[in-house]
Image (cartoon, rainbow, N blue to C red; front, side, top):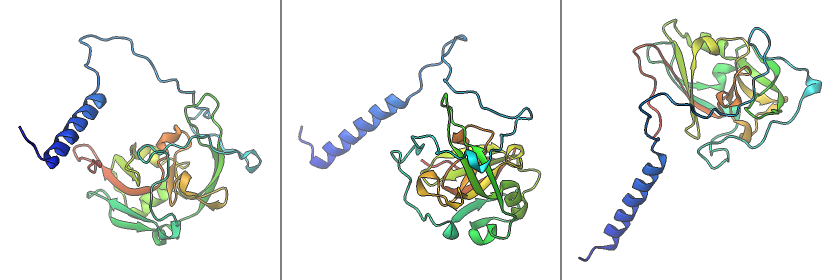
Length: 227
């Protein structure tokens, strides 16, 4: 049987896609409860009330490497890094009074905040005491007019990484949207133009290079995830 070069390429592509799906397929679920290995994560060093310890500027130290860019081969994705030109899509889904495109002009009038925290990863000896500058997320939520029916918030990053957070966590006074790092504009590798900082959670929750924010509640689905 003769097949064209285009058909051969299509068949090869389908075979490769099938192989990749097979590699990504989760293992079958056992028919009974079994012991499973746990992730080797260091315990978070928190204050007795569950908040993050605030450090002094004399204690600043570099962030732990390597950097976590999950879907762009460890490199910051291509986008506009200047925080003054940031554009974040806000999908209120009827749970906030304002929606559309959030710009720096919207953030600029909000009360500025700076704080020095250890951005804690799961490494045995995490380091990275950083002075962050920006605004409290609670101020952003109030500016958007987020309603009590909003129980969750989904953050989407420019590399298609995403994170869902409950609003109670996000309204904590230590949670920030930041565009400054050690009194300098946030560099691309650390999440320019703007990132989330949740200092009392593991670093992966402090999502970088935010491009979309959406809200959800019980019975209301959150925004569709990227393919």
